[in-house]
Image (cartoon, rainbow, N blue to C red; front, side):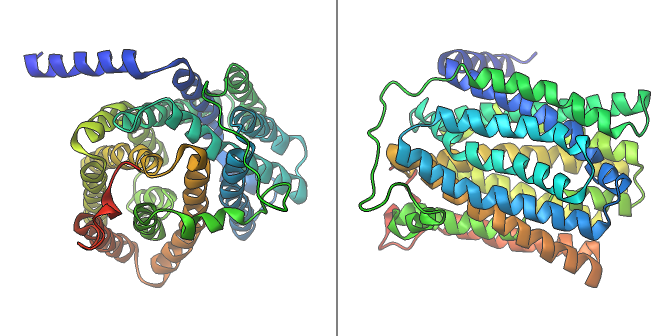
Length: 417
């Protein structure tokens, strides 16, 4: 092993031992087992829904309602956790709802029941997201937050790689036994809930916030945070939301592989490979961002995204797709955790869950719009048009980040509050 590589690996291991606190490890394990449960079901969800009588239109409506629930609730519950100055109860309740709702989808197949179970799962995600990320941000200084979020994203994505592999092995042994798989997904989910019970509030507890004349914030009160936030936060938010508006669901990547003749087993293999690359690269990418700067790391991720989408429009051999999914894993490692670290650095401690929840909520809505537009472009024009145009738009968004704010407002791209 080259000496430079050995020194780099040793440096990463040392920083992990120093920075990864009990809370960070607990939240990492919670996300690993939760995503393991979720991704056991992700590849077979459309198959199961079709088997119990859902049409393609019905599946689309179901997922749209579920994701809209998750998106809007992220902002509200992020705001509420700041208002209550408590984070752990929101994390515990959110993961509990997600764990219990998955097997409920297999108990009864009536459409309204399935809709309720699926929506409850996404509601759990909305309840926990802002509070969980605020807990993570509280465990690090601004100079090390990208590493903390990178580690968490790596653990989360490792679960996303293990889950589909477990599902493949189970369905190989018991073909089309979808309902049993939903019940089995309960166990890693409950293990995740068990870890949440070990969480503690940060030692420096913040005072409970009260709004004059109100017992608690309204459902859309989080939207008020945007005009009240700093110019730096707003400019970052507009750039992130612009990217979300052109970044459609990963489902379109898998559909493109199918369109180009890749078999189902190889297709799922590429998806697992992407998740493994992401999981392994997330912490080193966060370390790089902490040292190099959050903006350069994020922009590098956007450029990789543009290369991947442009390449997908042209690729036609399996090794082309393998290389592109490798780059796609690196893109995710350089952007998702880095974006949350950047938002955390631009927000006050007592508003951090609101800042992250507002971004996550608006991003969910933007992603729904992006996927709808992507489907329209795919069917009205062609898959190549969709991927080519997306690549060009993302290059423009990268230019927005590179250009920064105007000179009269240099604080726009500050990475610390």
